[in-house]
Length: 456
Image 1 (cartoon, rainbow, N blue to C red):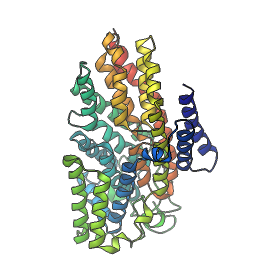
Image 2 (tube, helix red, strand yellow; image 1 turned 90 degrees about the vertical axis):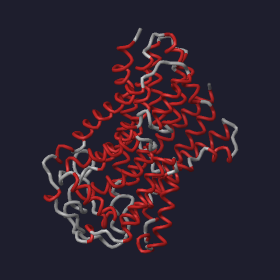
Image 3 (cartoon, helix red, strand yellow; image 1 turned 60 degrees about the horizontal axis):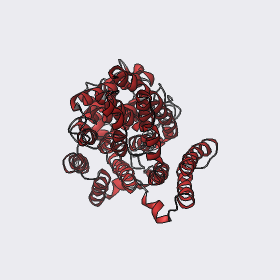
Image 4 (cartoon, rainbow, N blue to C red; image 1 turned 45 degrees about the horizontal axis):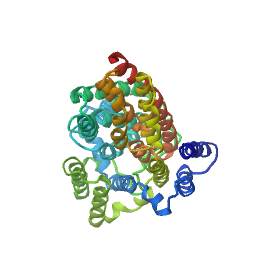
C-alpha cells in the first residue's frame, strides 16, 4: 500500500509543481516516471519507456502535420466554405454539424481519437474564420465522439458489451447507446450556451467580415477576444491559426472556392484516412503521415513550415503524463484502488466510487483500458442484485468517456493541439478545468440517474 500511496502522491506533486512553477508538466511527469519507476517499482529505463504512448505520439504529430499541409494548400479553406453552404450560412449550426459528423463516425466504428483527429482541425478552422469560441467547438467535437462511441458497432460499445457478456451479466446495448448519446447531447447544449453559443444565434456567414491580417480587424490580433463565451482571436497568418496553420501564402476568397490538383489529392487523402480508420482499423496517425509524405512529394511548397507547427509542447505534456500513469498501472496502483472499492459493504457507495475512479483515471489514461478493467470490479455488486446491472454499466461508461475532454486525454489533447496558437494555453487550461469538473460531477449525476433508481 505504501508504494501505491507514493505513486499517487507523486502524481499530485506533478500537477502542483507545474501549476505553481514554470516547469513543463510533461517533462516533470517523465522525471516522476523515472523516479517512481526506478526507486519504487524497481523498473529499468527500458521498462519506463515501455509505457511511452508511441501510438498517441504518432496520432498527435501525424494529424497536426497533415492538417498543416491542408491549411497551406487551401483545402481547409475550401472545406470551410463547403460546410458553410450546407448549413445555409447559419454559423450557429456549424458546431452542431461537427457534433453530428463526429458522432456518426464513432457510431459506425471509428475509434474516438481517430474521429476527433479528423474533425477537430476542420472545426478549429471554422473558429478562426467565423470567430467561434474554440472551447465551444472542441467540446462539441469531443462530446460528439463520446455520443456515438457506445453504439453496438462502435469500439467502446463492443468492449463494454463484450465484458458484460463474458461475465454472464444482463445488458442492454441499445439503452447504453441511447443513454450515452442523450447525455452527451444534453451536456453539449450546456457547453454551447456556456461558451458563447448564444452570440452565434442569428449570425450568418455573409455577415462576417473575412479574417484579415490588419491589426484590430475582427479575428486578428487586437480584435475580439476568445475563450469562455466570447469569440476566438487571431487570423491564420498572424497567429499561426490552429496548430495546423503554417507560413504559406494566404488563401484568398476567390482561390478558396476552386479545387485544384493539390486540394483534390488532399481531400482524397483525408477520405482515405477516414475510410482506413472506419473499415480497416488502421492507425490514424500512421495513415496521416503516409498522406503527408505523398502530398509533400506531389506539392513540396505546401509542406513548408508545416512540421514547425506541430504542437510539440502538447505532445510532450500528454506523452509525459501518460507514461507516468503507465508506471502506476504496472505497479498495480489502479487495480489497488479498484480492489479497495470492491471491499466496501455498501453497494450504492461502492458503485459511486467505481464511477469516480473510472472518470478520474480515464481523464489521464485510456478510456478503452478503463472500461475493460473497471466493469469486472463491479461484478460482485451486480451479482448480489443490490444495484442495477444496466444502470451501473451505463453510469460507468458515460463517466469514463465524458472526461475525454481533459487535455491529458487523447481527444482533449487533439483539440488543444489544433486550437488557434495564440489561445492554445487558455484552451488547455479551460479544458483541464472542464475535464476535472466532469470527473467529479458526471459520476454523481449518472449515479443518481441510472444507479439509484434501480437499486434492489
